[in-house]
Length: 386
Image 1 (cartoon, rainbow, N blue to C red):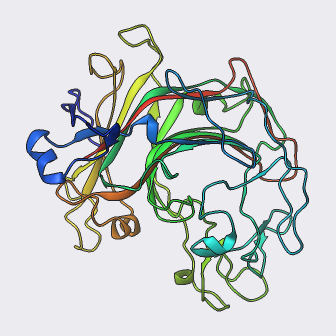
Image 2 (image 1 turned 135 degrees about the horizontal axis):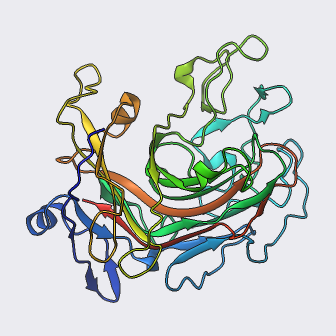
């Protein structure tokens, strides 16, 4: 990483209003002529659909921003039982509500259930007719619904907002966690594909050993197939196993049959000071640049690229106290191969934006309890770098 002390210039592309609708992303040529790279283009809140832990999405009175928190508002709990041959419902889980993502037959891969008791995956995939379950406590806002994307041109992401709060107890300190995230993703069902963004993850109750660091840290990440289980060579009854396997693949599987995840992360300390308007919201930005040192050229197939990452005051655009601009080389060649247009001179990626607040439970237990102050994620604005 190469820290600097001067923030990059922040340029904005004005959104055009036409017939009452925002046009997201003007033509690339016109935009680049008016607005130097990185040119930040906002994802309007009108394009977001809100999904809660219930069988249908509901509206969120999100003023002044998208705001998810613990304890969560009233939920509609699942009272039905799993269909024959389908995975047992996670307590209080809910069906996926995005159109085209509601059964395993809708998805790109075959999916296998992980058994925590045996540390292995099932040997037969989940039937295509089974409904896709979400984790038991999931709130997310996405522009992948009928009102939104996909949109092209993504070369980075920025958001103005805050992550805060702590947890007080957990039923499984090894496998339960609360994730708060703002991110870009390329595949509308959140299954496979490319992602990048910012997240905060809490696993340990406040005041316990090692809890303090994660409470004060968010991570910038870029990922490939982040929601698929990794390949396990030779595990199970004489064959490889994985959480996601290409449809049509025949056992015994090989690593090339699996969409295994990659997930590099860069730690960022959450500013403890207030911003210039005495608030706790900051502007988190990351965009792709040419790597001046050509650190990772992926066998000569690329010139080498980096992420430029900074945290700014959202009002005067100065660097957050104690922070610096970080240049982080992209080391994952499989990610670069899947995201070949993610370059300063390229067309950028096509996809969606989301903000999430999700509790994942790794085994059958009662979950996570919010502490004081309760966990909260607020997003006032989300932008794409063009």
